[in-house]
Length: 593
Image (tube, rainbow, N blue to C red; front, side, top):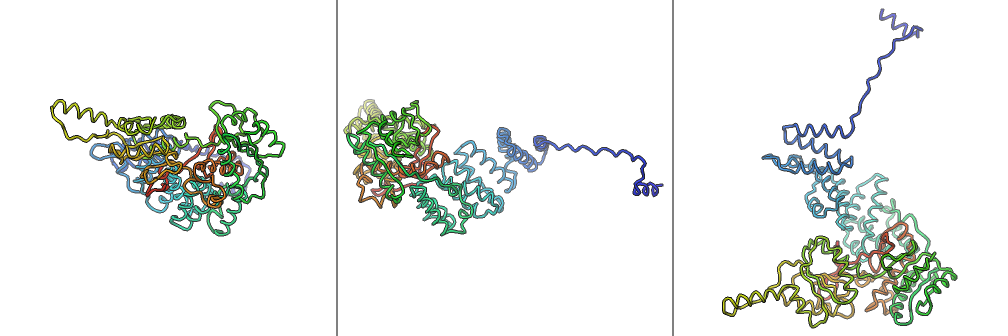
C-alpha cells in the first residue's frame, strides 16, 4: 500500500494531493521583550553573579536601543549595595566589568559629566585585544569631551595603527584630523617632537606643516611634500576629507583699513601683518588693493573694490565702520576686523573677526572649571575692556563663587584693595577686639581668608606689578593667579610676575617661520602692536581659507588663536595658556582644557 502510493507520487499521477499542513508562524520577540525577560531573570534569581550577568545583558540591549533613562536606572541598581553581598556590579568578572564601565563612560561622555568621566577613565580596564581596541575609541571620545583634543587624537592614532577595515580607517582619519586641528601650530610642532611612535609623529607633522601655510596653494604643496615623505602612512592611504578637496585662492583681495588719522597706527599694524603673510606665502599670485577708510567712506571704498574686481573684502577695522559697512548689505564675502553689537542686522556673507577681550574671559572661565576651582577673588579696573571681561567671566563661571572683589582705581590703592578683598581688615578688627577684652597687647600677624582657591585679575601690566607684591604681603602668594594677555603687554619685567598664568595668542609666544622671516622688516610684528599685526596675518589666512571656515566649518589654527565660526557669524578664538617661569612665558598645553 505504502509502496504503491510512493510509485504514484513519483510517477506524477493526477489524483488530487492532500493539502499540506500550514507552516508554523515563528514570532520573533521584540528587543524590549528580550530585555524584560532578562530583567525578570535578574530579579527572580538567587545567585548574585548570575543576577549581575542578567542585568548587564539587559543594560547592553537597552544601551544599543538608545534607552538612556532605563540604562541609567539599571546602572544605579547594579551599583547599589545589596546587603552583605555588595553591589551587583562587583560580582561581574573582569571582562564583563569592562563592558559595564565602558557603557557608564559613554553615558558620562554624552552627558558631559567631567567628574564622572575622569573617574571612569581611571578605572577602565579592558581585557584582551578586542576590548583594548574598543577602549581606545571610548577613551578618545571621553578625552575629547574633556577638551583634551591632543589626548583624544593620540588614542585615535593608536587605534588607526591596529585597524584594517577600510571604511573604519576613513572614519578614524577624519576623526583624528578634527582633533589635531583644535591645537595651535606651535603645539602641533611640540607634539611631533615628543610623539611616542613614528606614525603619531607623522600625524602631528602633517597637521603642523599644513596649518602653518596661510593659503590653499601653500597647503596643497605641504600635503604633497608630506605624502612623498610618508607614502605608506595611514593618512596617505586614507587622507582626511580636508586633504581631498581644496578651494581656489582668490585672485583679488580688498583691504579696508584706516592707515592715516588717529587710528592710522593701528591700521598700519594690521596692514603690515596682512602684507607680511602675503609675502611669506609667495606674494606673486594675488593682487591686494588697500583702501584708506580714513580718507574715504566705507561705501566709496566698497564701490571701488567691486569695480576693481575684489573677490573677498577684509575690513573695516573700526567698530563704527563695520556697522556702516554691514548696512550696505555687501554682496561679496567680507571678513570684518571687528564685531557688531548684538542685534545689529548683518548678512550671511559677513564674518566678524576681532580681538575681543571676551575671548580671554571665556578662556579664563574654562581654565578655572578645568582646575576644579570653586572660589575665587576677582580684581578688575575701571577700564572699559576690564568691565566687559568681568561681565563675560561672571556669566560663564558656572558653579564657581567669587567670594571677594576689588577694583583698582589708582596704583597706590592696590595694596589696600587686595587686603579688603582677602578680609585682612576683618582679621585685624578681630585682633583689636580681643586686645580690648583682655586689656593687653597681643603679638599678631593678620591672616587672609582661607576659603579662596585662586585669584583672577582683569588688569593691565602696570597694575599687575603692584598686585603681585600685595598678594605676597598678605600671604596669598601661593594662590594660582589667572590673567589676560594685558598683564604682559609692553616691556613689563616678567621676572616680577613669576607663576602668573596668562591667556595669550600663539603669535606672542611663538610666531613660527612666518614671524621669524618678517621680524626685521616689520617692527609692528613685536611690541605694542604685535596683536594687531597678528590680526592682519590671520585676516590674510582667512581670506584664503574662507571655504574651510564657512562651508566645512573646520577650526583653523591661526596666529591669534585656533579660529572657528559661530552660528552668529562671529569667529571664536581658542587661546594658549602660558605660565611665567624664570622670567619668560612658557606654554602649558591643556592648562585651559
